[in-house]
Image 1 (cartoon, rainbow, N blue to C red):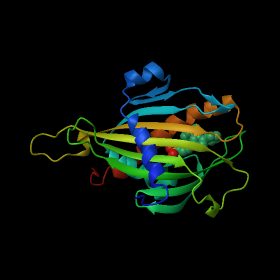
Image 2 (tube, rainbow, N blue to C red):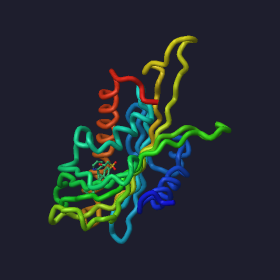
Image 3 (cartoon, helix red, strand yellow):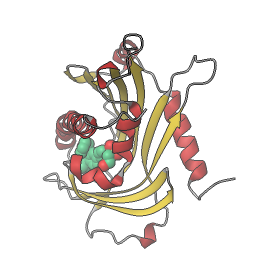
Length: 241
Ligand SMILES: O=S(=O)(CCO)c1ccc(-c2ccc(C3CCCC3)c([C@@H]3C[C@@H]3c3ccccn3)c2)cc1
């Protein structure tokens, strides 16, 4: 029985993202042009236009030491800390908690000259996908942010903003190097493999050259800033497995 009106939609969007989980860099590079590489971070992008709109899908694979997938997803999902790490936002407002793992948010992005200011209205969902008993499958934590029009009429929107439509997923896998026998697991034994995918439709006219420059500049910056934020927030805290 659907727990709330978006329950079924969320389930099918998550299932779709999980189908593409675990893209290894080899397979990626065959079909996704690499646009940025720094340390363990690789950012890939395809150039796609839909009725004259730049809708370039983006995928990033990153490995971050010292944190778990649960911690990465916890801070990515938590609306209370969004402004602490999201440098491109002017405002964020939690409109409604659908359950403790699903909520609806309205955000206004900082204007990207010369384009009109953008806003987003989306559901967020956080989920732990444990590996099955056969332990073939891996253990994932997932957060998905997806545009919606659910109860939009209740939302006081900022005038003149162009609505961006998007579908974003953050899929994380924790790798634990077992510590010496009898020793407790410390953050030195942790690595988190992150797969970030973003499909963003800018929602209205924007010059292709400007958009592609923004994508190329903003995504790596965004991923670096967010992952560093989680490292800083968790370093003196007990590990969230
Ligand atoms: O990971 S999330 O779910 C985190 C929720 O806060 C998310 C991240 C980014 C966006 C996003 C929204 C608008 C725009 C553009 C479109 C025209 C003018 C602004 C962009 C462009 C790609 C560039 C960009 C990338 C990263 C950060 C900010 N800017 C991205 C949406 C959601």
